Length: 92
Image 1 (cartoon, helix red, strand yellow):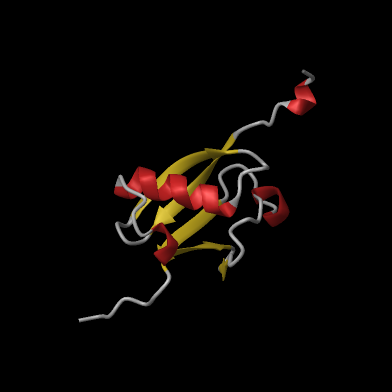
Image 2: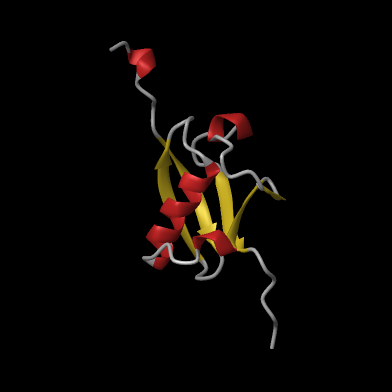
């Protein structure tokens, strides 16, 4: 196997707003947005239940196609992502 065949992993920061916690997730260029969301929710919430109810934002825009890779988004080491509920939460 050549060194080019091994994907280099790097950390990205993910803020999970439902618990106001930032977690670091190790990813590579081929990691999808869906995989990133899954890992971030597992790290912050200790569960991935209702995972489909959350959306991921990068550079202020929601990523609607979760099969998009981080390479396609142009993510670099320590890039910030946000995982938040897809529906607005009522303020009381």
